[in-house]
Length: 234
Image 1 (spheres, one colour):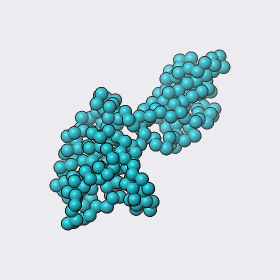
Image 2: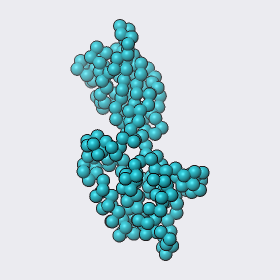
Image 3: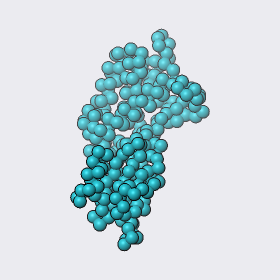
Image 4: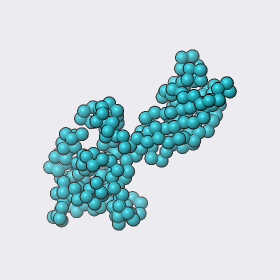
């Protein structure tokens, strides 16, 4: 679906098509509402706060809805004594899925695939001393934490990391309308940016966006209707 069709559908659902009887809605408000709505929709699907209480990959339907947002990127790491730390996270990072890690050791130069477990930062000291949880090349497993918008992959000096691939959900593409000025930055869009999610999902997000706009202009009938339609079709 292109962004011009999206804008027409937003106006239609909001009862603003060819109407100027009250509270005109500007183009940047449509953009802001839609971009906000799609982030909220993605979070509901990932954590299972949708009407079906299904998180990501808990059903074939949910896998199909979210697969276009899943991507992978090879990380650049700084090696320290106890761990290797990412230089930065991907700029489009939205939510973590898994880490694919390959490691080597003096005795074994062929990279080995490691199992990586996520742990809490408060448990790091205990896990490093725990024979059942400590990083081990022989057992092919280690652990990682998130801190300061970076990932720390613990080695305890036991092995070297040859490659780390982050599999994650990326931010949904923010739409833009050509010629529309962003009031937050003052920048005028020079081209349309269309939604990248599937059309059936965009239709659901439109209902969410209309609900946001209706609440902003105190149009309670449209707000209640679109909230119901969104969850009913989720």
